Length: 114
Image (cartoon, rainbow, N blue to C red; front, side):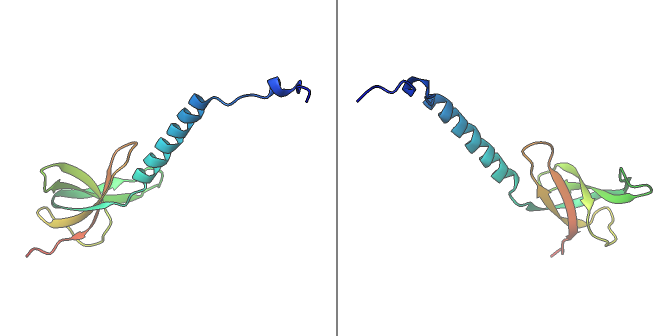
């Protein structure tokens, strides 16, 4: 059988490049899955509450609260309820972690004190 003259022009695949590409794709998929995980529930005590200006909306405001978490950290949370809140109220929060950027907190309600 005669030798094919085009056999040497077929590009060969580099196994190292394929391995690196697989690792990059697997890492990106893992980061995507971690970033898409649901928020965790936390609780804390309101330190202060007030209105902040919402950028992009003329005259728009949103309520925000400074909350002391159970671990002692002081965070700022967007208030998602219409209930009247005052300093000292025990509240429930949702904490959304993020791989890139900062975590965000949302105040979703009061906690019943038992």
